[in-house]
Amino acid sequence: MATTTDKDALLAQGKTAQAAAKQLARTSTEMKNQALLNVANGLETEQEPILAGNRKDYDTAKAGGMDDAMLDRLLLTPDRLLGMARDVRAIAELPDPVEEVIERKTLANGLEVERRRVPLGVIGSIYESRPNITVDIAALTLKSGNACLLRGGRESLHSNLALVGLLRRAIGEAGINPDVVQYVDNPDRELVDTMLQMKEYINLLVPRGGAGLINFVAASAAMPVVAGGVGVCHTYVDRTADLEKAARIVFNAKVQRPTVCNALDTVLVHSEVAPGCLPDIARNLSNAGVELHCDHRALSILGPEPGLNTQPATEEDWGKEFLSLTAAIKIVDSLDEALEHIDTYGSGHTEAIITSDADASSRFQRDVDAAAVIVNASSRFTDGGQLGLGAEVGISTQKFHARGPLGLAELTSYKWVIIGDGQVRE
Image (cartoon, rainbow, N blue to C red; front, top):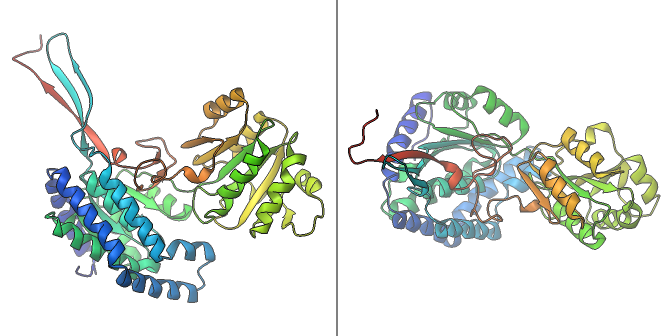
């Protein structure tokens, strides 16, 4: 790919992407699936150039003082590339949403009315650190008949260039115009400002990264934006919870991968079961290196037990997305108090309850205002791959036009198709 060095070149990429998107919208499912399988094969068999680029990015970022959470997001390994390949294969196996009939009916006057899914056009994304996003977005936009215009962060430039090279080559080998994947390979911030105004070329923009980036894009973009990804995630251990389940779920939600948006941030524990379950929860988390910021009631239950990694919580701990081996713990006296805390401090991403009470479960599902509500399972399941979407373009915490993980269906709109036999309106 030619280096994008100025505004004119970026605008040309947008125009090229629009033209390629129109071609892709008419491309068969078989060709799109073959392109995806080519990508997956490349991720499995052509790893070294990608890993070499990633090592360069990682070493530079580490030397520059990037924190551990961001370094973990940046890092690619052979196993992570294999995981990306599995996700791409899963997308290839999913039904093609393009031209799916969402609704069909025949009116009293004989008109046949349908709503059919159609691609959006060009999906733009501005994102930080995680090079796997490049593959996820490209694969999902390809299958849903959309082109993409991607701008990754400076810190992942060499990783992304290697991945984009593989993507474009694999797509071209399937007989599809490789221009359906466009990458802004100049990290100049001025080009971000240009991209945010390219509404004639970009139909939807999805930012991925920290709150600062997401808020800036949402406030500055001229085109529609699906914003989200900031996850302040709570797990509430109810008074009827199975305490063995609770300890296992809380541990997984915090420790399995602490640097992602659906990792647990705050544990809320009902006061009736706190003496019976909190010591085990705290011991397990502390043994895994988790720093626990506890309210005074939790501290009084835990006491000075050696090995517990505890400290007093502050007001700043509630509503904080830690993205690290840190969690907050608060004791509550009722489901009402837990719901009030979540309503005050949650970000609308993922909230979980552990309970054996069907009424408490139903009320939590009904009253919690979040993109995903989970009962008796880890918050880590709010993920496109885990929910059968293959992967995701992002996780939306807003309510229009899509909410939660953005998969194939969320990258489409629809058209009305009305078929008559000479009818006229009276």
